[in-house]
Length: 102
Image 1 (cartoon, helix red, strand yellow):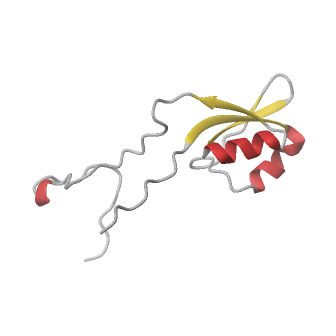
Image 2 (cartoon, rainbow, N blue to C red):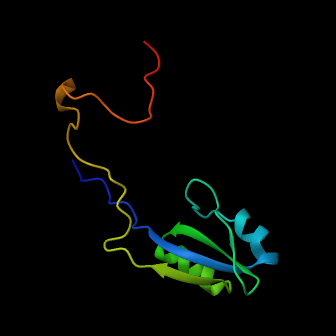
């Protein structure tokens, strides 16, 4: 069986836009994380942290937006592991999740 393709690397960046262009950005298919976090700057612009592929960042630059890459070695670590982290049922899950059903 062939190996599944690796996911496209995603990069963290800060997007700086004029406030009047903000609605256009919010309508785009951009990953803002849980929700857009807009921070007003002293120069009248706003900044938003985003997660995007290199090609998406380039598209934004070509559209006239200011994009500042946040350097992270190896891109974003999504924390996805391999194997059985619950040790065959001997280790209970922890966190805010809830068991539903059954």
